[in-house]
Amino acid sequence: MVTTSDTEARDTAATTALEEELRKLAGSVPDPELPVVTLEELGVLRGLQVVGPGRVEVELTPTYTGCPAVESMSADIERVLHEYGIPEVAVRTVLSPPWTTDAISAEGRRKLEESGIAPPRPGGGSGPVMVQLSVRCPHCGSTDTTLLSRFSSTACKALRRCESCREPFDHFKEL
Image (cartoon, rainbow, N blue to C red):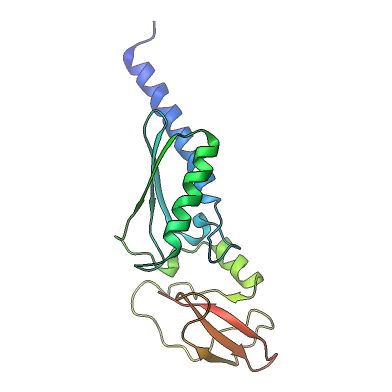
């Protein structure tokens, strides 16, 4: 005999499995400004919940308040989940707790460096930002680098040049 609690337990397990699958799908969306990393690797995908049949809510935390990429991230997540068969997707921006560079996964940091972007130092978002005189060049590994501009192609990156190999590179700033 199947009881109501057995049915509820199966429904809960099915919902949890679906949420995990949808989160992986949403998390695999590339960041529009840094397409070498996914939203999961960047740490901006905060949550995903099935709220009803064919209805999903997604929570995103931008890298900084007013980040212009949030609209593109939201549209890309909605598109991917619609293509999966979820007709109603609501993406909410969540500002608390704020995003920090500590949210970037080890894989995300590795991918940034491989693409020529110096990743932020781990622990940069867990208190006061340390003033450090050098940033390691992602091309040659030298710490003899110079800040050219506090802002690069996006507000979350600075433009630097390596004095050893003379190559310019972006540095993802610690927040």
